[in-house]
Length: 137
Length: 137
DNA sequence: CTCTAAGTGTTATATTATTACGTACGTAAT
DNA sequence: ATTACGTACGTAATAATATAACACTTAGAG
Ligand SMILES: [Zn+2]
Ligand SMILES: [Zn+2]
Ligand SMILES: [Zn+2]
Ligand SMILES: [Zn+2]
Image 1 (cartoon, rainbow over the protein chains, first blue to last red):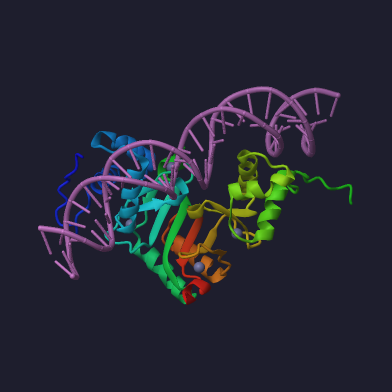
Image 2: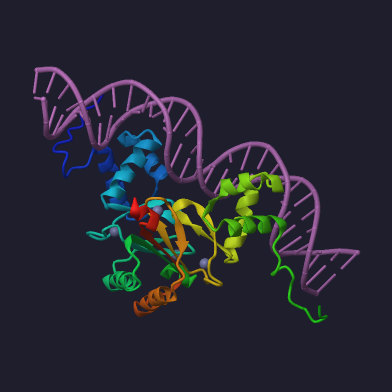
């Protein structure tokens, strides 16, 4: 019965759970796993996986974060607006992930899609690389 | 045949477990999940998840099948040789998956990658669509 | 033949994600 | 103000996906 989380104007504002999950991802900048998020936010009052997954689902839906499927992880969106079209580089050796901001590349893909008359609703591009530090070693 | 076959048999032949898993995927043509494969091949002698996952891992490594990460499923390779570069369409409504064969598209992506000086080792492209039957309804 | 790399079979366990159920709150129509 | 509705919440249980650990077998290279 310890509720009352001053929601204030449902439009625009996230709920407490959504907020703390988003903040964690924001501050981290790296892909995080759901159960890591859960552990990290135990002290903030998160107790169950479902609380995390519900917040993550909503944030993905809002385009504020992305799920990187191949590593079951979530990362803050690095762009102002991806419109659900995402592109990442993933290091094959250390797993490091970066969202690609290169507009020329993503526009190019969009053009290719048009040229080939694929009627797509969105896309997710995963480019596997060897990151700088992994290339050295 | 000849007495000059110095190449290894090993590289050509699959083991029994790898064979039956590949055959199932081949005959299905659709993405299948590991535990579905396990159930389907109980009668062939597969008893544990690990047997399936080991076979799948090997087949992926050989490029004979692909894993579709966003649905935790595996599908037979539709091309002679993808060189680990993959591209799929996935229906957002029914989940139906097709491997894209369009060489113009994949070459175009490869060119874009080169133009943008991304040194990639491979890529995986997932295009979300509404398939024909889902578009009707 | 002997050594070795790869594969096998099995049990147990880890990791990731969802179902089910009841409660609480904000909004808008009555 | 009361009702109805949609969304979010909290909790427990469980499903679905994947790997660890260990002992054993097989097949090919030398
Ligand atoms: Zn983004
Ligand atoms: Zn790296
Ligand atoms: Zn293929
Ligand atoms: Zn469909």
